[in-house]
Length: 438
Image 1 (tube, rainbow, N blue to C red):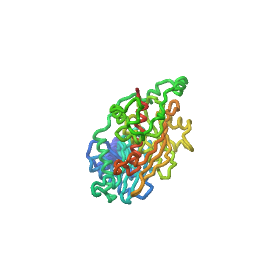
Image 2 (cartoon, rainbow, N blue to C red):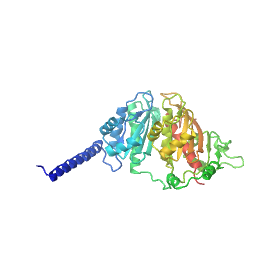
Image 3 (cartoon, one colour):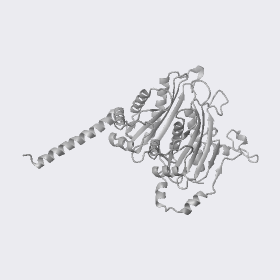
Image 4 (cartoon, rainbow, N blue to C red):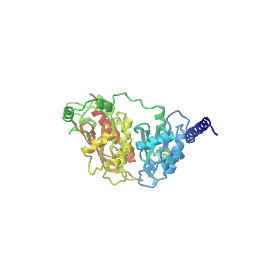
């Protein structure tokens, strides 16, 4: 007769073997992926196609994984990621929700997930390639920790006698992927150090809600509108009143505020700010899907991606993962026919636990193929406050890739990706500048 002690010993032995096997499989998955660095373990998702045209997504994803491995970035074995997606029926690859993020972290041991969206893939000469990528933290509520993009064309730097022209699409795409990998490697080696601030969420939970505070916030008299005399197309010597000449100090201040010597040309045409101080506390932003009234497929999604990128790069706000927002809105059956309603603002902000909400409309998002007209983008955006439902920011931006270009096409932008980056960069700088403490 088998004793109780013998049975317990056998059961303990089996459990130990199973645990050891499970850990070994997880470690094997990480080792098979590659990378010997000491940074986070990254799961690379398949690339989502937002270009509206056929593209070799599998080849690009494989090339991206190889490039990351070659750069020393620790990645999960792509076969393990594919198996996870099949097992959990993951069909939406343009983002990740909370449930999928928790499962991915638990089953693969990944710390972050790399999500990439192909914006443009054109083999017509000159070839053009645009890709947007982001790293999303899998611990807790998924947030975007790093985001970058690349938008290049074969004739960006033609050089003398056209010696710098690139006619091979594979060479151009490899150059674009190399830029993304270099940016990821730099982020891992030198993670951004952000200023420690009080969490707006924690402060809100500790503060007792009163109707008087709500009324006070709504009746705030601070307002900042676009100066009627302001025009971004005015010559530099006419930007000041006649009695105040444009000085070197003015030029330096304008350059600093615009983030560069020529970025002012991409400022919003019209804008409004409540001038409420927003950067004194750590606030989280949720960018809900924009309305798409353009003729290009996925234009609204692309505009949201570029706006999120600039918000992440600026570092003044925490940016919630776009897939989490999409999942919440689908589960709550939030339908926006023409703009977002106040009840929807309450529903989304409370369920997501965010402080600010961004919404907008894309009127035009035109990319060009081959030689021809310049890219064109036209969109508007609004920012809402969770507490008093007040509009904190509203603006309208419109630009073309050849704005401010006069001599030998110097400064001309060949892709909508590059144009959207500069427009969103100028927009974010305006928002932060108008909402900072004086």
